[in-house]
Length: 353
Image (cartoon, rainbow, N blue to C red; front, side, top):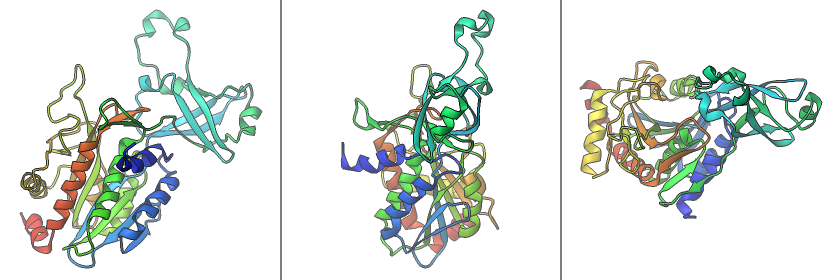
């Protein structure tokens, strides 16, 4: 495996659902500590790495949490009932393997539901409701499950491993939404030197998947003038899909809009100008049914000129998704080039445009 894939593998495989991102934040803090002047936190656990001592306040953020489940109940027969964390589509959850993280270690379970043989014919074409699902641990009683360490409140994540696919630039893993955005912010902090024309706050937020919560609290800490969320976007270059501006390997997506943000138009134009000048490929996409951390960052205090950048991702919000390494690398290049040009004069021009 290529050396540059190693950090992506670690970030993808670390467990960290909304409200339980500690293992991810510990890894990230260790990765950035020698590349920033200080590492601080908001009171929810978002990580903030500061670089640069003067100039406008610039915030780039990738969220650390992944979609998953929370154990809510153990039935007397030993089956697990749960609450989803983040947006799950019921069909992608069926017959999947999960990891329940307990004080005694990982316990594996599989999504259980009625077999089709006993579902009326007319009902088989309907999407099954998630509240009819349970996790089967392969035990016969509540006591057996409890003896394994399972209890209400346990974090549950998809059981999935990082893999390099047929074309070695296609990378499969869980939690790309949004560990790949976190990886971009880590690498941006590493590649920029300390002589910046701005104060950069590389931020890794918590609880994005349940309402952009860490974005709100960390933005209160940072008080940005410019805020850019680096998240995943849709890759729809598949049979029956619309590939235009939604393709793997064609560059980062500079969003026209999403469910939480109409981007600051002058900032968006500036980022596109930088991409063109640096010959960095990009796509102009949009998301109707989702939003990014920029949805809260742009509303902090007096407001911040904000933008969402997406890394195209196939099969989002499932056990396994696919990204393209070139999109990751080009997003890093674009963010580095943009940040180098955000001096006080340029930020004033953007804010006054």
